[in-house]
Picture 1 (cartoon, one colour):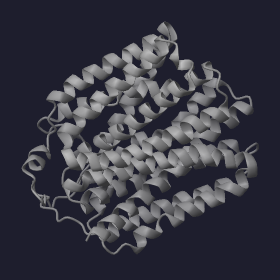
Picture 2: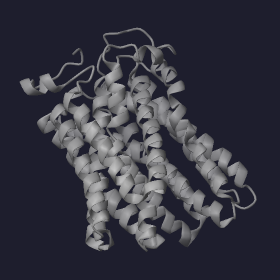
Picture 3: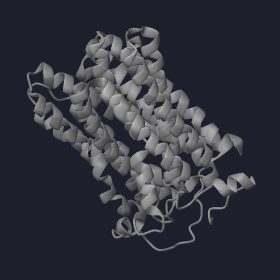
Length: 415
């Protein structure tokens, strides 16, 4: 049974990394190519709209929940979406960047729609394939897959692109996306938890999710939890430019070392959450976020930021904390999905974290422009402390904490 669970976890890790690598690569390489082609900064900023499908994907998530009743239903959605994703990457690889740039942007947008659809189906299948007590391990695979995709797509592939070019590299990316489907196709151990609620998902379920008792506090948790660290992540590269590091050094230090730290801490946090429980984990990780923001204020205000050791420690701290925070947010969110609405509920919760991260990043960047890095880090400490106080008293609508304290060996899906 242990082997089966390990293979199930590996199956989802491959699915999460497959959706993340191409997206990370396109998001990293296109702004560089546009700037080299003398596009304006406004045009480059508008490029962020290609990620819009990942913000809007909650709109079609009820359709997937409604259509999926069996393992094969989920597999058809996942396999179909990933095959379309790979085919679109193949087509993009055959186009010339200079003469077909607008068409390429349009095809990438379609590819991201396919990827977002795969993500909905994957999240829903994951929620139904594991007992709630195993969500921390599952969601650590989700965090690890995302961070690994960022490291490979935004780091290694970027370097490879400079060596072999667009047309030779992208077909291999598409092939990898297809190969990542093999573990799912061969996995005969996946079993769905029986649904007690036999009703089908409907569009109004998105609205009804927010009508649940206690959901307002949970939404506030999703808005606050990342706030003390996300602003630091958003200005980390500009900070290092100001410190005199070049693009290659920044890529190695953040894209490889930082992301690798996030992967490692995501894995550790899955075990950590399972060992001590959700409530204690949320409190400890929120305290780590306070410590991270405080470290950056101290190291910058004291002038130690010019030390390589100090900046590397900061990179490890911010990415490691972010990796742990991602796992506990995913785990807490997956704990409260409703039967028959797994994809809808989980998608809406993660979209809330995306939106809040965008808002916090913009506010922090503006504060940084006005008051400098010290002002930005002070704001991050304030947000982190507010989040810590809130998390200390926070109780999610559905909580595993009591069950974990009672050390119930097998958690039923009917809880």
